Image (tube, rainbow, N blue to C red; front, side, top):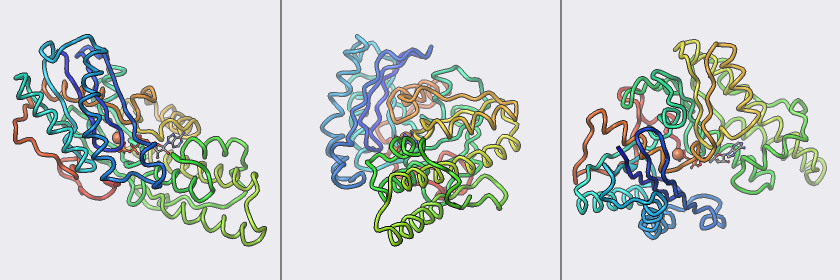
Length: 347
Ligand code: ATP
Ligand code: FE
């Protein structure tokens, strides 16, 4: 089976063609960061318009790269939420049009399921496994028992870690997205110079919090600025290193608990924050210690893309899911069927 995947729930417009054996025949991602750069964040109206403009072209490009026509495919998978409603709607409408025109089956995919099932696309990992999703909009632990069987063990109660990296970068005068420049600055920094908090470590369970950490960094910065009239290069490096170490400590401890609780044989990570080498090393060490295999998909498949949506569609289709022209675009759509829905849903 071969599926077309369509993704437009955040600030990337993407289309991909994926085969059920895990071969990615094409994966096109058109980012929008340049469009939003002047605004210090994603502007929903701009995102929606850009998706509407670029979706057709992305699909055309993906089909051309794969060397296939729509008629050669076996189904169309589209992100039906959660995300910015304008973008999700654009994708869902396009997918419906393509499905109606071609007679191909339509499958609506949860964006988070796309991230959570990526280790099966890249490494054919067997169920069950533990997934830590750490991105700009999300942070949660998911036990994955099947294509539609997710249990949420915990997640952030305020900011997502990527969001925290972005805010730290902003308040230190570093460019956006903040993850890479903060990681780079941290390399020359002393993580122990400033005493920063390890939020929620004193509380049981797997929930996380990052906003207090951000406030602590802000306070240190203000103290330095008040005392010296500005920040030295070394101050910036030390603050970045301290912040990153605190995030690593918190993620590592909560991951240790999640592994202990689930006894999962595999720990997989996804999301743009998983690109961070320090965090990755900390998580890998925790997995090693728990006797779990550590798995981090290639970065292009860790961040938003449509190959993961096509793949999740293939799995959902195999499990019997079919959607009709009444498929709804959902701004909120918790993966976990019965857990506290909004907590930690991020943006
Ligand atoms: P979502 O996928 O949840 O809707 P998103 O599109 O913002 O949100 P991703 O594209 O997965 O998320 O990741 C982007 C985030 O990852 C940004 O916040 C960015 O700062 C962060 N990030 C990227 N590289 C690194 C890094 N090396 N260290 C830390 N954070 C990073
Ligand atoms: Fe995402």
